[in-house]
Image 1 (tube, rainbow, N blue to C red):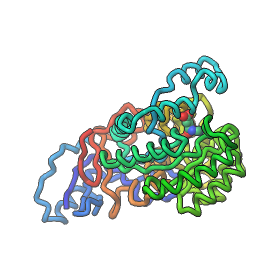
Image 2: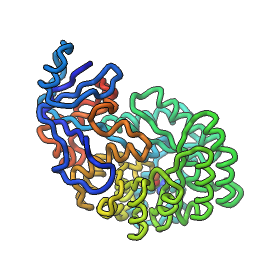
Image 3: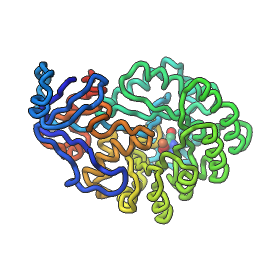
Image 4: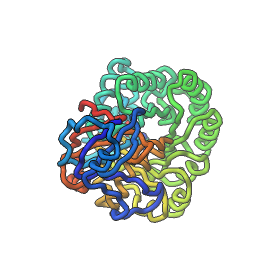
Length: 412
Ligand code: NIG
Ligand code: FE
């Protein structure tokens, strides 16, 4: 047993429901709190520090870290990223801001296809190095669980290369990485056949290999006019599901209709939702499928935000993720993005914190993290500040002081 603290405040998020709106007076805040870690590196108890100390006389060690001017929160979970990629699309960003259209950007060598070419040309070593740099940046923000998608390889060799890089990265980081196969990101320009035939190619050639090498047990698809169409996508998702894959969907980013498919196939999450109709939002909100807002994509593209307020008011499960990718969401700072989403969508602090902790963990099928309570994984983040509200108030400019993974402080 190990007791960590005393903290000025611990915000546990314990007892908060999985779905629906939250007010800040529902937050459990423990003043002068301590976190007791057991021999399995899980949380044994979170309570007043002195109380835990007197109840556990076997604890002889005095606290080694000065934490009495710090607050603790559950570590954050980024449930949607594309951080394994080659190249850079700063020119896309500049062109878009100068008023160029999607087509003009693609014609001048930008767009997703440009990232595919750079990713295909990168060696595994290069991809591993840059992916780990991005993982370490996310960890420095207090994010200890990170979903990472393939989707810039778009053929057997390169999709496997990306997923192998993510698997290798897992051996080199203490953060939890959750790989997702996004071979259905776009039909690559060099594929001779229809988009339906490309989906069949994924089912026949890529997914069996992904299974065989145990590279991912989740798959994703971009359902959109410019990518894959609703009917072929639904068929693909059902087949992938029967192969044993969990499902997540890039849904309703520019045109509505696909979040409904996500719900119908029992997806873990439907992400984006900037264009979802009111009717479809209600349908989604009544399901077990998590609705994931990606404010980083709205900020990167200058498009409207996901209607997060409505999702919560309809009693949905709202997660917030960064979508960090080289094209639409180049920032990568989930805390900044979630804070900004809160100001535009009028979200309470509790709703934002839930959206980047246990609700986003649920979207990944991980129910052992995101709250500081008995039995949970010992992942938490501390900030040197006297009030937890300052974390979102400072919109990402207040950096974590320490990051703990499995009850151990890690170097950042
Ligand atoms: O989540 N919407 C499709 N895919 C990504 C963008 C990827 C890219 O532009 O490279 C997204 O926003
Ligand atoms: Fe995305």
